[in-house]
Image 1 (cartoon, rainbow, N blue to C red):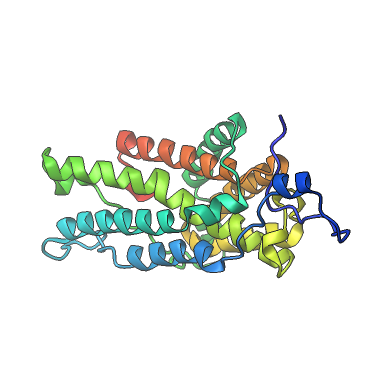
Image 2 (tube, one colour; image 1 turned 180 degrees about the vertical axis):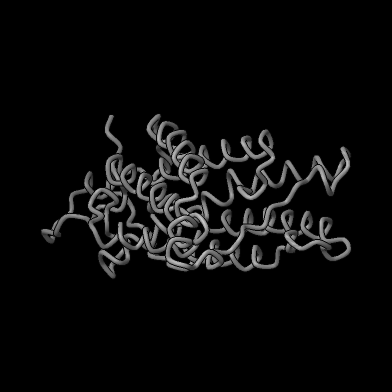
Length: 262
């Protein structure tokens, strides 16, 4: 059975509708832009409030405040996503396949491989701008939390945020709205398989702007998922790939202690 994207524009009306056609007609997607933008806006706003652990002496209770911030992010965004869930399903049926897992695993290898080389900083150093790129703020839970309920809560909510909340919020904005909007202001009618160079370019700009310290890795990763989007036409495949990459990244961070990848 072939999955059909609900974002396909309906055929032109002939002025007559049979009873059978009426019963089998699929409801039009709800053009609710706020549903696709609000989750990422809230995520970015709350994330900007994270303490800076790169300093030699973080503020008192910074780790505890960071834990509560992550809990708030998970709880608030889960509520927001639940409120708009029917809107998302009206645009994209809940379908995905193995390609999301494969692309997610390849994306993890791509991200770690490119970041380990440090191409961005090498290029800027050659241009005489070695300090232009910001340092990512890493957080070591072993350093700030004992092996107790705080440590367990941090790992649980951090992985929930990393592997579920972030992929859904970011993909809703990117593949759910942005790539379709730049192709056609009547974005709710645009199929993911019809995204052209404008949509792909918008993703590249977003990737570089939101990941300046890993711009090359981000451009490569987001472009790979754009390829998956166009080939499969399944929005939830993109979410699955994002979740798999982030899950593997989280496990890698816990194993390698390279906390800047959180």
